[in-house]
Length: 262
Length: 248
Image (cartoon, rainbow over all chains, first blue to last red; front, side, top):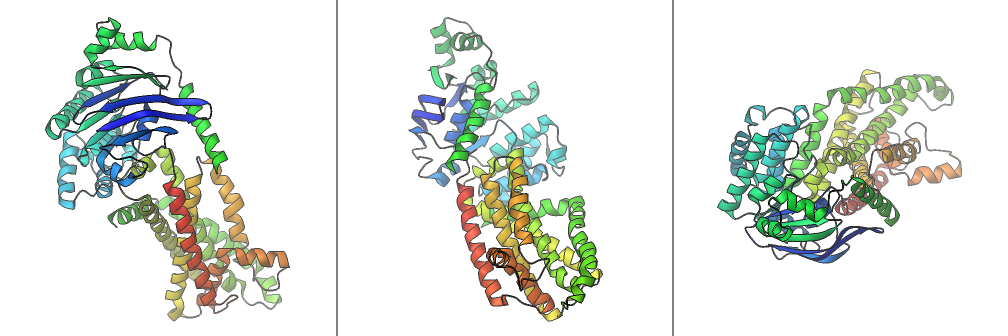
């Protein structure tokens, strides 16, 4: 369903994503783990047509984002790492505009919005402006929105960031259900190893833009001779703390290069 | 088409919900109309040009349409900052549709703002020459709004953060306003100013408004119309192109 081959993204000298390859078969839940600034979000941005790769190839459902942008966009849904709601619209309006953009027919749209908002316990607040919502409520709304159209591939970029354990549990429950019922392929990133271990069929670990290991959670543990995914992760990526400088550097460089390109 | 409508509706909703902003943005045109208008009136009269309030009101209406359409178009920057832009960029809709929906929404808001300013002008003593020509004046308002909303969206697509906003206001929007003849007649200008005013698309918008509101024309309504339509097509094309190239 997702095929990535020798994918590279550079900002000037900085290699944010450095020659990675992996495949995610249909119906799999694939976790993409790595320390801060390892290149996870950059990879997701390339997969979701927001960034153009420097080199290498990628396809979603056999289609290349470079040549079939709109077709590719029809096939996936995404929950972004950072907010992407319109604070001046109500919860319902945010859901509704998403449904329209993804061409969900009006009646089905109304039904699904109601059931999803009820599911994520936002129905009572449907007419409240999103700017008045708490962080957790916004997060839940983003996730509910990601489920509104039923995509073939669902990207979840640190979806549980800032959620309480109840909502986290609920989210992964829904993800598993969706994956089993609709055979939706799921590509997720998270910093919570227990979550990855619980839901992911396969895991790739990325560090400094390179994939350092991939396999099932058990394979990764066996490979590193550790007894938890967290220990395996630390043994593969080291104990040093990454500041976000890699990320900030990438942003600066990106702005800089874009400035010169124009 | 649904996507264009949805984006249009979103812009209009946001505008209608920002009541404080609507009132606040009346302040600037009112200063031009009341202070500059009454202040320069005696000089204008003595120069044999007639009533300055009558002359400047169409310019003030054009100015408010210019400012609110550009601001609304550059609202793209807020969406970039607060994240909603991403949601529209990954949507399975050609980005040109998103851009056109946004632009038409911004233009609608600008026309609403312009109507409000025109109403206040009339309360302040401005008298349109003929009511029959009012619909044509609205036609020019709509064209001005589309031209500059598209320009705003185009500029918003290129800028990365709010800092660029000041640059746009000072180096693009203010010159467009001052060179448009909103405040002074375009006749008998020094050659450099004559050239600059005649390449400013807003000059044709203001001239169109003046033609329909006070029966005074510099370029002629058909030239005004033609230039504005060409500018609208050009800026919408440019804006769609730049918008489709946005990377985040």
